[in-house]
Length: 214
Length: 400
Image (cartoon, rainbow over all chains, first blue to last red; front, top):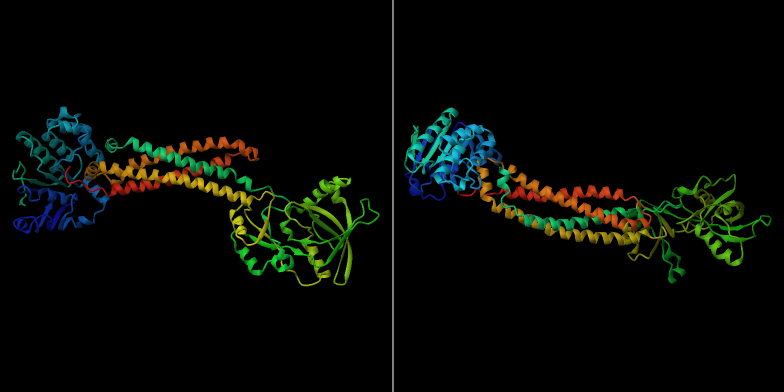
């Protein structure tokens, strides 16, 4: 997948007045593979909605979104599965972890779809993010910051052309942000993948091709 | 790991409830099916001289009919109607003789002298497979083979001879006796030798070969060809309940086939088995309903987890598979247990059937096994379709 384009997209819930000051809603925008994009907005402007639309998680909008030339409304359930397995990865704001499973099991659940990383690589990532001792802990018993790190590692355990991140560092300290940003940057470079990161205003240590105000 | 997630919220009491209801329903259905297969030999009697696949039909003789012979003959419309019935493979007529017949013994013979007026009828020879090589008419030899009902001989031996101090005679002896038959009519008369060539169990008349009848009617016959008063129906299954139903429907018909009238018995037993099968099915329906409700509840409770797995890239068919497998394994277990119960039931009624002469029930057993496998698969298909439908329609939850 080389690009994601949006054309005149507007969420059902957004009043026209708010949309008129946006650089994305009801405009044309293009995210290319290999580029880094920051989308910043105040709370309630529709950041999570935008990423949800791009990922096919939600469809409460008008306008159209295309992967290359393919309108995403026409994708079948099977095509969505393979896109989510190896084209687009997503760090959800709500994380969507399985709280009954351990940290390692949550990551493995994703990894076993494409066998992208070895068990050792996963352990290395846990170690790098300071979670080595939490490996077999149930996610329900971890802090939100720790859960965020697990969700990010999980998102890296698959091949992708685009990585979507929705306020991924909101509960992390600066040291962890630094470590994880570097890790993400390495993965993006090795995959020549694109990044679309939504935040409330913080920019985080990435070098962006474009910064959008939503 | 996915299995571990999907197993959440599976309710054992609900599954047990379903298993119990389904076990009851399937046991009843399999047992009834097995029984219906096992008693089939009752309705396929061994082939007699006159094969039981042939039924003779005549009209009832009433007081009115005594004075109007039209009432006891078949009109063309009636014959057409009978012929249209599904159980009729072919339809033949009795041919009556249109000449006078007198049978007598020669004074010199060793049996007591007798002389009697007789009549003959004939039916197509193919209906008399068991008649043997003697059953043919040869104008040169001038011997007429005759077939009489076995009852006639019994009547003589056990009724007449016993009470009148006459000797009883065996079938073999009767077949040795040669007597004279004088045929007259149409201004001609001729004397033939007659011989009893066989006995019929099912056909209550005095038969001669069809060839003789054609020849003699042409030569001695007087008057027009009579209307048929008796017809013979060839059928694949004389125990077909449709036969009893059709002739019981007030058409004023008398039907005679084998002596124990398997049609009515079969009709009764088939109705009984049908009722039992319906009861079994009626029990199965709420069981299937319970399964559907359990699936709904399970998918509802696991909606969030299933939606998250879809977002991770799991295919919905992959998520449905363990549930489908569970339904299949559960139904197979219930089916196997029900089949075992049907087997026990069979061993309970086997001695009673043995008393009726039916042994070797393994045929019914294996047919039931095939039926059980088919039934379990068919009962699982709705479950699987429902599971897939519910999982395909899962909405992705708004927040993880």
